Each structure stands twice: as C-alpha cells, then as structure tokens.
Length: 437
Image (cartoon, rainbow, N blue to C red; front, side, top):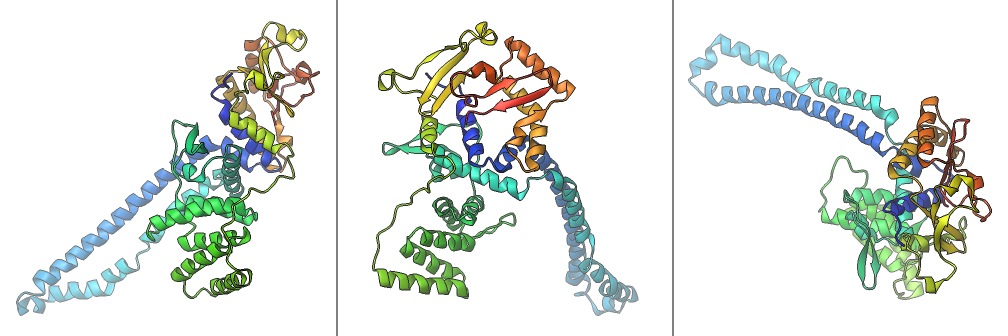
C-alpha cells in the first residue's frame, strides 16, 4: 500500500523535530518560511532603491568627470589666450577649491547606505535568528541520515540516495535550489561546532569543491572562504582518524595562507603522527550512535520505505483495515484507514485522516502560539496552543466536516496513545496534537 504524497514531507518534519525536540529552531525555520519570503521581498525593494540612489550618485560623478575631462582635452590645450581669460582662471580655482572637495568628501554615499541599513533595521525583528539557521542546518543533516541522502545530490537540489550501484530519487520537489560553497560551509560549520565530524566532513568536502570551482571568486554576501573550509575540513579529517588527508589539506591551506602559524604547527603535528604510526589506509566515516533514541535505526528504516509495508508473507502480523476502535461511536460512521507499519516498535499509519487543506488550516491556526511558546524555551510545551474564538470556529468547522471528534480515548487500548497524529477540538477552545514519533 502506498503512502499519500504528503507522507515523505510529514516524516521529514517529524524525524527532524524529534532529533531537536529541546530546541525550536528547526520547527520555527520551517513554519516561518512564508513570512521570511515576505520579509525578503521588502528587503529586495529596499536594495533596489539603494541601487537606484547609488546609480544616480555615480551618474552625477560621471557627469562631473566628463565635464572636467572635456576642459582639459579642448580648452586647456588650446591657445594661450584661453588660459589668460579671467573667467577660465576663476572656474579653475573654484573647481579645485570646492567642487573637487564636494565630490571627494560627499556624504551622499554614506546617506544612501545609512538609509538601507535603517530600513533593514526595521525588518530585523522578523528575520531568522542564528538559532533558526542552526536548526535549519541540523534539519538538513537529519534528513541526510534518515533517508540516506547523498550530500552531493542535495547540493544540486536533488533528494537522492545510492541504491544498487546507482541512485534513486527519494523525492522530486516541483521547485528546488542548488547550494553554494558558502551554504555548505555553514552546514558543515554547525556540525563542526558540535564536534559532529561525520557530518562536517561530508558538507565541508562539498564546500571545498564548490569554492575551488569558483576559482577564488569572492561574493560580498558570503561568510566563508576556501581557506575557512579547508581549515575546518582538515581538522575534521584529523578527528576522524584520516591524518594523511588532513595533512594534504593543510598543505593546500598553507599555499593560500603562507604566514598562518597555526597551520604550520598542525602540519608538524600531523607529520609526526604519520611518522610514528606509519602509513595508514583511508578510514571510512561512521555515523555516531544515538543516546537519546534507542529505536532510531528502526524508525529510519521505516522512513526509507516511504510508507510502503513489506509483502504480507514477509511479516504476516502487518495488515491494513478500517479502524473503528471496537466500534467507537466517534469512528463508526467514518472509520479510519489504518496500516500497521511495524510491530516493534508499534507504528501505525492512518491514511486520509484529514485533507491537506484542513491540515494546512490547523497548522496556520496553531503556528502563532506554537512559535511564541517555542521562543519561550520549551518545544514540548508548544504542542498546546490556545485558540481564539474565531480560530475555534474554524477548527470546529473542520470537526463537523468529519462529523466526529477524535481524542486520545478513541485510540486507546492499542498501546499507542501518542503513536498517531490525531486532532481533538474540545469545547474549551484548545487544540492538541499528538505526533507520530
């Protein structure tokens, strides 16, 4: 049985959120994408206004340059009588005394950039914080792990994993973007700062490759450089035991930064280690284990199936049915399509539980309270968000469409009170969510 199209995205979100349940960064960075897009549209307009102002300023400077150049190519190269003209002498003295001064020490450039900065400041409260950036980077690494995605493919905007000597598409989004060397550097740096060298190696390798391909071209929006990526990558390889490659990268870094004393010390250290230990083969990277989720591998294996259960003969205990929970009145008229995905741990998938539009409405209604409470420091606490009267009416309308209310009681008796994403709209006006993981 195939999962609905949204299953991949839902599982992506849930697995990523579970990995960072003590932080709200991943959740807020996903939930506020549309808001961030609106903010960036404003910033684009502000930058366009700045460019127009600067272009006008440069046009004025070009005009002054052309006027003075014409004087030197025509008037001052003419007969001596022209230079004896008191009007010519006056305009020359005036230009040298005040006009050149006004052009060279003009405050217009500073005023233009100050206007841009003040408008940016107005939007700063709505911009993602550093925690959001780190959370988004962690989410990419989590998806990399859960779906065994190739980082080289992610960098090109494709969600692919290796399979049988080739690659298969895990997801084909309608719209995607490629990542730059600076993008990969920031993801690798987040892993590096957490001493997660397994992930830092993968992402920094791509960063170095892309920076090399740029042939030293620098962009003002970039935070990292080829030297930064080489520095972090060399130490990451050293920490994973690949000392010889760390030495090679350090030599390359020294070529770009010959006076870097720290790199010289590292090279000396790596050479001593290689000299005492002898030549060593390249070590394969191994993903670190998880101390917070003992069933991590099982859940990730389920995610790799993307909702498709094994053939019945492989595990007869897996089945599909119309679930009414022992003829519960709430489910009799509209039973839920249930698919048992795993017996240990016990995981059940409920198909067509609500429509995509209804799910979007619920997320939209819950988002303001969720984000506010997440920023207060508790991800778990954020699962309970109070609805306003207007929002409650919308939520109740959604419940009426299904002609039943679902709460944890409707799913009890099967040992998975928190196993399914269920929705309840009680009369008190509160909205709860119980997440699959």
